[in-house]
Image (cartoon, rainbow, N blue to C red; front, top):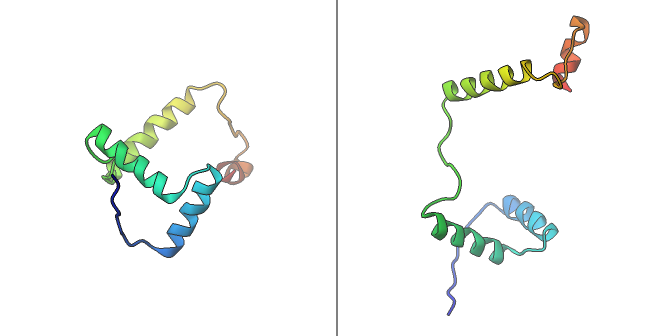
Amino acid sequence: MTTSITFRTDAELKAEVEDILEDIGMNMSTAFNCFLAKIRDVGGIPFPLARKSKHQRLVELLEESRKLANDPNAPRCTDPAKLEEFLLS
């Protein structure tokens, strides 16, 4: 037995999502059913909805920068004149 669900969404968002789903061989109905099944399986929304605080984001950036500083394979820039170009690449 099936039932219908109707909801409103932004037309541009819908079109963009439909293009993505088409690329992976799925339509909106199948994708939405996958989403509903995942909600059921995990007992809630299957991704975090809370926005991280500025403090949390800064801590994560600090941790990432420490990992990169200790990674001998991480890209490096030793030329101050090229620093901006390096950071924006």
